[in-house]
Length: 113
Image (cartoon, rainbow, N blue to C red; front, side, top):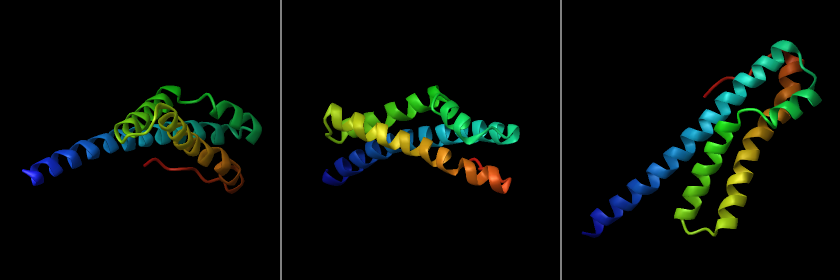
């Protein structure tokens, strides 16, 4: 009985993490396409950073919602879940905006996951 309960809890937790991970990959891949487009145009870093903040909003919002949902299920408060999800989503964006100059200077491109 306890084993069955444990498996059910693990399955539920894994399903939630899968949603969050899948939405993170979707957001990252969308930003990859966005970044490659701007690298091909040789967009200046400042212009790219401003544009990137508004890029891929559907994917960003899906990732935010999935992480927030997971955090609420794990017992976080609404504020804790929102803060953590926002931090995670902002981290994905930051990895692209911080790496843009390096890609531009080396004439390399990010790759999709």
